[in-house]
Length: 381
Image 1 (tube, rainbow, N blue to C red):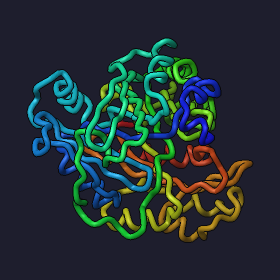
Image 2: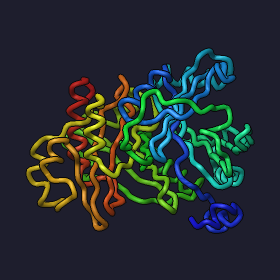
Image 3: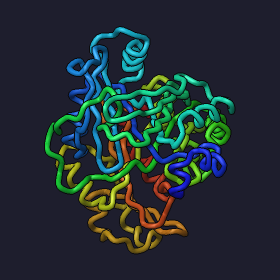
Image 4: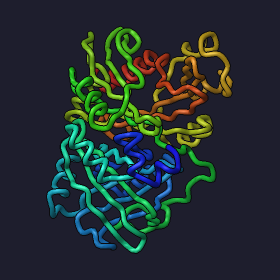
């Protein structure tokens, strides 16, 4: 987007009916936000920057805001249920476990974005409204998407507070590492029920004006035992990218089937975090106790033949179990964590891009086989 578009919403709408500035935050409902904040601080190297709780007027919930570069997580738990919102959070954690409730998107004009979305079929949850404090004014509005996930549309022109009105700046839980483990949210992946992928792809096409970026079906995204289908929608600037997965009929239960069973329906499966040094990231996160999916040594025996040279030597990739994929635009390096809670649901991806805007198509079989090995250990394959 040009500077003109960023600062003049009317011009933005003439160019794009649903302009976005990027991901604002990934909001989690968790059973214990204080402990979750400690985990993401110590294991992921994020910095606690803001807090909302009883000490500053929030009697029902406690929320911790953590950042790493442009990536922002908000962790919320209920202290004492007192409203419909508190009831929703309590029930969500009981039914789904810790999970993502909101993929918040920053927009230049929240009122216009909400109007466009609802006029094109989105279900509005919260009408556009202003929230203010001494740092300025933010306009918020919320629409529903798959499962119980939502998109809060955030307009924060000139706002200089630590996150949103109602939050106060706070000291880090632990001092973050000198070198960031990651810089931004690359994409957020949703799992939906069998037969509903195209419905939700169409939702983003119609409601947000997103276009289809990639499609993965058939043998590309299947193993001997399980299969899935995936399509990727994105805004015109590729700042916000949402792959949507659904299970496919196969011999055994796929990773998507397992997720839907244990999460209790559609929801966010994983968040991909962009790093400019995946080797340093993986070393730091492993040292902090983060568990990653394993990759057999055989994957690396022929890697150079089809992936070509990368900035990281094959032996280092083998040591750290990092995957490589290459397309016509360049290559990427990626690795996936195991689920970060007891239920086999939400996990994370670390990704380092060198030209490629793909999603690791060449790694799907290796990745799914790694996931199947974990499913088998859990007795869910």
